[in-house]
Image 1: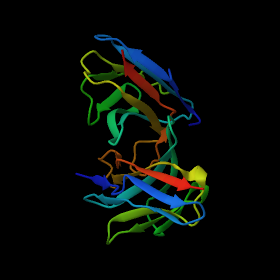
Image 2: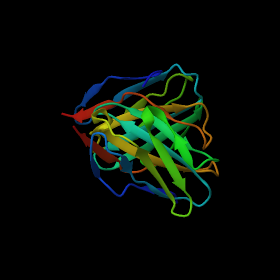
Image 3: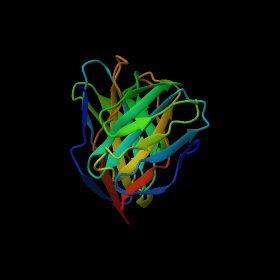
Image 4: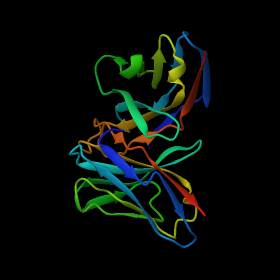
Amino acid sequence: AQSVAQPEDQVNVAEGNPLTVKCTYSVSGNPYLFWYVQYPNRGLQFLLKYITGDNLVKGSYGFEAEFNKSQTSFHLKKPSALVSDSALYFCAVRDSSGYSTLTFGKGTMLLVSP
Amino acid sequence: DGGITQSPKYLFRKEGQNVTLSCEQNLNHDAMYWYRQDPGQGLRLIYYSQIVNDFQKGDIAEGYSVSREKKESFPLTVTSAQKNPTAFYLCASSMGEGPRETQYFGPGTRLLVL
């Protein structure tokens, strides 16, 4: 069975500082990994995904994520946080075998203070 | 959220009543999905459909039903058998059902029980 863990319910960071939202995963085969963001009472917005190739993936709004196979992690990062980045962030994984559905983590609330 | 519409934004259900949530997409996507979101639990898959007139149960299908008569539409019915329906319901679609495909989400419907 596949699974995703987001170990932090909430991350607090000051505006202008770098931010990291952590994600670890477990799949039997090779992983396809996704990050989404959700603003209050809205749907999820796709940020970026890792399929294969370069371990550093760049996405929307200045976000990037680093795939680390040995640590089974896919942490979301941004060099300089904005107050408007405050939202709920979801990591999701799917096994490359194609017979599994997308599994989401429980989400991490990011709060960026002015 | 562009390209996927969900209605209504808020829906109230009385005891013993069936209610239907609408999901329409104009992205020409083959695959569509329904998720349930509860606070602190992430997203859980209810049903998904890879093609018209075909759909599969997800992790929490009990008390729900779907149909896929048109490519653009994937309505979800919450039946009276679903004893705890209060949640935020999200519809998503993707070009295909392959593991590399990105799922795009609608704005959601919040279901409340009277």
